[in-house]
Length: 224
Image (cartoon, rainbow, N blue to C red; front, side, top):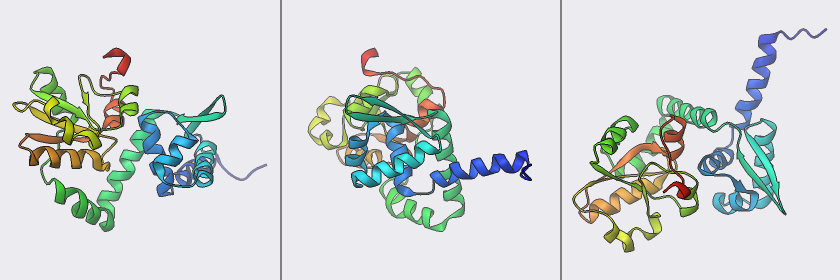
């Protein structure tokens, strides 16, 4: 008979999940999958890792049951296995890092806060402003991610296209930009570019996955 009690058995399984989170490449893959399901080839291109390394990390995530797979023709497509729970766990991990690790706070100050020291708009505040029609919401993620899901009424201008498409944005309404998550640089860069052109712009406090995980309304391209 095993001497391992039920609590210890559960902790062992939880430790396996924690180990699966223990690599920056795997965290980045999870962030990409929080936007939409993707093939190994797509994730390889997005992450900058080799195909072999991407596949290896995905297999670790799969063994921990953090991702599911589906074969479509010649391709294997990955998706998060429980979007809300995984996004919530990543959010909590970030908060612990910001609280406990000086290196995390130093990076936040050096890169993020130096570009935008203003307090970001909370989800609750943005919900109120949307209901009152007081804001334009700007999604600066790539079009394929936007099509899979976005905030209600958001317009999509990927960051790379922002400068040449400024004419599509109102000059008399506040703009709230968002992207993939709290550490995604796209919204920071977009807000800086908009302010430089005279727009009143702010960031959402995090990104689309956190908005969705909070149970707030979302739209897809088909619903627009």
